[in-house]
Image (cartoon, rainbow, N blue to C red; front, side):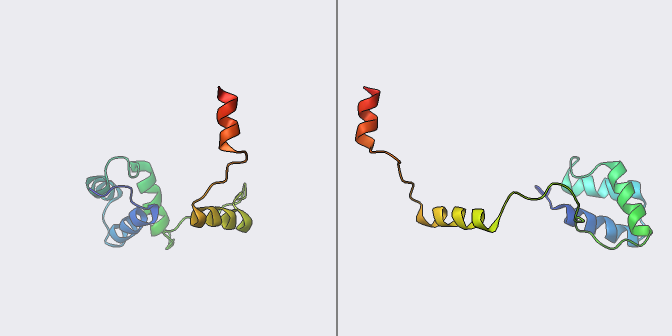
Length: 102
């Protein structure tokens, strides 16, 4: 059994079996045999089969409107610089911190 398959991978399998004229129930059975019972529900498989039969070809997630990402180029650069340096500066001397605890 495959662990954590990508959604587009399962959708590609559904598309393949749909083109081969396999029923939605049988496709769901095949998907759960290979990817496990949590991979995709029967109703979602049926929905995808209908979309593919109606001419949809895209197996990737569609871009949605809504809340934009909070990740900016500046944040990515900051994280990368910290990752590369692998050093964290302590904002106060360690000795004075230890004295405070005593």
